[in-house]
Structure formats: structure tokens, C-alpha cells
Length: 290
Length: 254
Image (cartoon, rainbow over all chains, first blue to last red; front, side):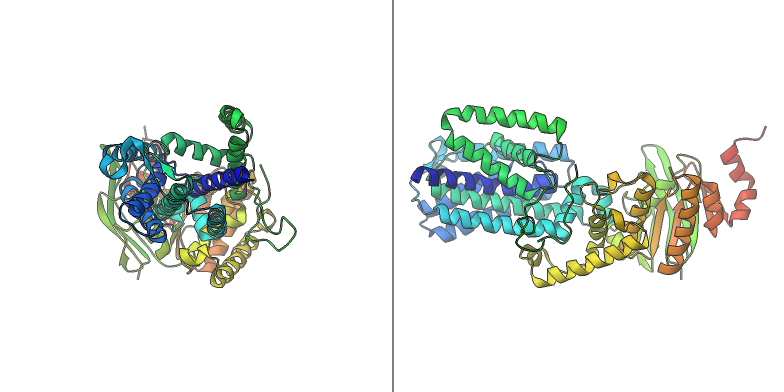
């Protein structure tokens, strides 16, 4: 039982990260290889302030979130006006920079040895509740003006600005929000896994999160959520075959790019109406057309 | 007072002057046209007015305020809407959502309220959807509301783009080659539609167009551009007889 609880914890932790990426890459079309760095920043901020400065856990988590806000603004301000490919490169650079910084400021961060010794303050209930709240918030954003503007920006920036959308400002909101989700998730991670090191969330990890979003489907929050759960549970339950997990993911990516470019779940959205319980959550339900 | 005043605007790309010292005055509830051969700078003129590209020199006033260096989305919010030569709809939003997206400026809730889907958000969204649906029926698109724009025939996509522009409640509408790719019957319908929306929504419209029948039919004033320079301005019948215009279109007399 404890094993499955552990699997659930890890799966949901990673799904929190995926949700941040969904908002940014899935809805808005911003490819960032730097989200892993925000996870690291959050995890380190929370751990160090807790261990070295004796801050209580809630305050340490709050500081991690603030770190996400500040980091998001600092990275976003100069980069979000760049073309998408350059944005990708700069965030990649940022990710490597944070990793190097964590390695080189060993006196504070423990360097390559990482940080250990955090008590396990975060359990399954807290992770699950965080997950539900984050999905709820993103689902709401997706169903309203915010989400429509995100998708419009992804489809056609010029047309979006001609419809009165402040494209730069909106991207900024999205980027900071995604960074906050990642750094918050990072703080939870640190106090659940109880060990962090600089190489845990490198750009490859960021890329993997993006791939999961693509496999799940850019327009389907529920699809991405399910894909993420499947991917991480598979890896934990079938540890012996965990190498195959990435092979399967890679194959899926190829198949999807060729045959189902809108992702496994297309535009399908799990709604209460779909379950037959309540009228639709969103004002404008989509037809599953592909 | 004029609605739009363009005061000798210029723009060059590299060494090529795309638009040079272009001026025009557009009154309220007036339809005027900008014509000229390919590459004459017509679309660039639109891009300059809507702030998509920055000006090199000159000034633009809209409704008494200077909009010369305003960012594009602010200009839109002041009341200038446009359509595009190559249709630019949002293909990952359905037809209804395309209109609701453009109606976003009518919503007053904040992102925070939206995150928690407060009652204010729900009621405003409902109202917006109702408005969007009324525009759909105005443009006879209601049965496509749940479809994606790229599944519609070309003519309907043009109409949808027009509907989307009107969702912004503009007082000035810029149409960039609205007749491109339409067959004669569709063009005929388009002319009637443009008249109708101009009368009912009390709009001022500027049309960039190649299709002479359309321009000569509905514009009360025409500006002719050639290599970025305005070579003529006047009523359709004057333009038809203007020797410089004929030369630009038909070439040098031998």
C-alpha cells in the first residue's frame, strides 16, 4: 500500500509540473526549456530557507512561490518579445544558468551533493489537494477570456493583437503563472522526496514535460492530465521496464505527429456534463472534430 | 470633424519606400477605397494605421486623439477594426469562440475573478455568448457555430472574419481585399452586406481592393496609390477618367 501511495505522490507531483507547461506550451504556444529551472528554484528556495534560516514550512513555500513570480518576471520581460525559436533558446540558457549557479554556490546550496535533511512534511493529501486546485484554476482560465486569448495568440499573434489583445502582457501573465506553478510544485517536491540536487530538473526534464503536453493534446486539459498520470504511473509501477517508458513515449510522439497532430485526446474535455452529472462547465462546448 | 486623419505618413523597408507621404481624411459613415497596382503600398498603409508596423514619419489622428505611436491593441480598443488580405482566423477556436474572443474587450472581469469563475464571470460570459450568437445569425453563420473555421468554405470564412471584426464594435472598419477569392455572386452579396453593415452599424469603412466593380460601386471617394505615392484622389467617376491612374494601371501610352 505504501508503495502505491508513493507512486501516487510522485505521479501527482509531476502532473503539477505538467499543468504549468500545459498553460504555457499547450494553450499559448510558448516553448520554454527553462521550466525545470523554476522547479529547481522553488525546491531550493523552500529547502534552504527552511533548513538554513529556520523559516516555517508555509513561509518557505510562500517564498518559493515568490521566487517563481520574480524569476518569471525577470526572465519573461526581455524574452517574451522574442520570436518563439529565440525564446526557446534563451530559456534553455536560463535553465543551464540556474543549474550552474546551484552547482557553484555550494556553500549555500550544497553544490553537486544536493540538499537533504528536509522532513517529510508533504504527503499525498496535500499534493492531491494542490493538484485539484491547480486543475480547477487552469480549467476556469481555459474556459473564459484568458484561455481564448491564449489559443488566439498561439494560432496567430498578429490577428490576436488586432482583436485588442495585449499579446506581450498576456504572455507575461501566462509565463509568470506557469513559473509559479512549477516553483510551487518544486517546493512540494523537496518536502516530499526529501532530497534535491541541481541536475534533477535539467532542460531534458523540461522537454519531457512539453512532450507529454503534446501527446495529450494541446486543446485538452483533461487529456494532458490523463497522459501525465499514465506516463508517470507506468514508470513507477513497472520500474523494471522504465526504460521502455521513454521508448513508448517517443513512438507515440512520432505516431501523433504523423496521424493525430492535435494529440491523443484532440479537443475532448472531461466535463461534468460528459459524465452525465451536471450541465457543461464551459459556456461553449467543442465538438470533437479532428 | 473627420474620423480619421492621416497626415503624410511614410514607411520604407530597406531602401524601398513602401508608403511615401500618404495623407487621407476619412469622414464618419463614409466608405472610401484605396486602390493601386500590386505592391503599391495599400496593405502597408493599413498596417501603419492599425499600428502593426511603426511609422517612419507622419502622424495619425483618430476621433480627435493622436494614435501615431500607440500599440496595435490600443488602437483596436479605440475603435479601429480590420480584416486581413489572407484570412487570419483562429483555427483552434470554433466559430462561436472566434467571435467571443474578439468580444473580449467587452468583458470587465479580471483574471483573478476568472480563475475562480465567480458569478460575475459566468454572467458576463453568458451575455457575451448571446451577443456573439446574435452576430452569427446576423451573418447567417449560426449553424456553423461549433465548427472550426478551417472547415468552412472560403466565402464563409471571409464573412466570419467580417463578423469577428464587428464584434469589436468599431467606428472605423478597414477591409483588406474583402473580395479576393470570391466568385461574382459572392462579390455581389458582399457589396450588399457592406452597405447593410455600414447603414445599420453606422460605420465608416475603408476598403483596399483590386476588384474595380466593387470599389467603383460602393466607395464615395477613392485614393490611388502607385509605388507608395498617392497619385490621385476623388470620386469614382473622376478616378476612372484620370490619365495618371490609367497609366499606372494600363501602362505607358505609345
